Amino acid sequence: MQENNRIEYKQQLNESLEKEVVAFLNYLGGGVIYIGLGNNGEVLGVDNSDSLQLQIKDRIKNNIAPSCLGLFDVIEEIHGEKTVIKIVVASGQERPYYLRKYGMSEKGTFIRKGSAAEPMTSKMIEDLFSKRARNSIGRIKSPRKDLKFEQLHIYYQAVEKSLNKQFTRTLELVNEDNQLNYVAYLVADNNTVSVKVAKYAGKDRVDLIQSEEFGFCSLIKSTKQVLDKIELENQTFTKITSKERLETKQWDPTALREAVINAMVHNDYTFELAPKFEFFSDRFEITSYGGLPQGLNKEEFFAGISIPRNKELMRIFSDMELVEQLGSGIPRILKSYGEDCFFFSENFIRMSFPKEQVTEQVTEQVTEQVTEQVQKLIGMIENEMSIKEIMEKISIKHRPTFIYNYLKPSVDAGLVEMTIPDKPNSSLQKYRLTGRGLSLKNSML
Image (cartoon, rainbow, N blue to C red; front, side, top):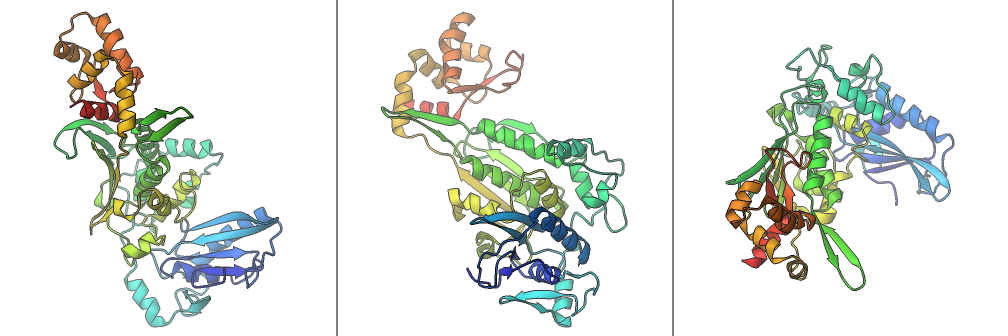
């Protein structure tokens, strides 16, 4: 692998680091810098990797403007038996970036051309500045001043990191006027941002059977709750053969996790809307607001080029270890679902994940294993129903008989589920078919 427009090799950390980082920040698609590789890619390695990583982070943070926190990752890699440092740099939305000591000038502003960092002309600087994003959530003032961040402190402690008294500045939760910004509002304990997960009986939005609210709190908490909900909905199907027991999920868990986090981090919150999560009988959809970032087209998007819309959120989610590496999310989604799962519009991006269909062989096996009573119950359940409603529909009056011969076997087989699983004895408890139960019902029609 040779140096090119997106790859730079350095034998050791030297004074040109910031210049190379600036060039990639200003270059659409960013790039990668390797410390410890020779000009031809030969592995030389570095000593004192931990110390070097801290130096690199401090230099990028302090010597480049505007702030590029959240736009770079510093990673240790092992090549053979030697340690190499990899710096992943994403293209920023506040271009042009420049060396702080020289300002926004030809001497301080660079862009990647071929395998070199070239100075930008005055015209290039002016053109980029005129297109700079000016309504980012880091600049927008928080709607409220009385924000508390107890949840944020707890989450940082959970990953063995601490926030000092200056954390609002460190995490860029204040704008240029030193007022709490919209990023602070999103990660505060309380806000008015609604994050909903909806579930529909069919393939359209006509018959809503469930809607759960996970918003009005720190976006980190909302994200974790949405991930938990999706994990709960992602049923596992088991197929037992003569040789082995095979288990498969309705959706690929890794792809869905990446899609949820990607939507939360890159959503355009200037619309004052959070991403939308919806389950249908045949698919799961995620809608995030705002189209592709300015200057990025679909081909570049699918090629893995990353222009983070909300670099402050990207940095916080990275600290929370929710984001592994810049630009890694979309490739993971594409690996399982391909480009067809994406729909782009000027105002939103929608990801649609088709539900894994239960094969006829599995359906036949399930049908053979369940009793006539269970089949009867499966055939009668519509949407969400209480025990009383199901008993009336089946024409059974003896509750213990219904529970032990009909309901319990259906739940144990993964064909029926509770709407309030955390409170099984709730007076509001109802029951509905799982994806597996719905497939069995359809096969019996």
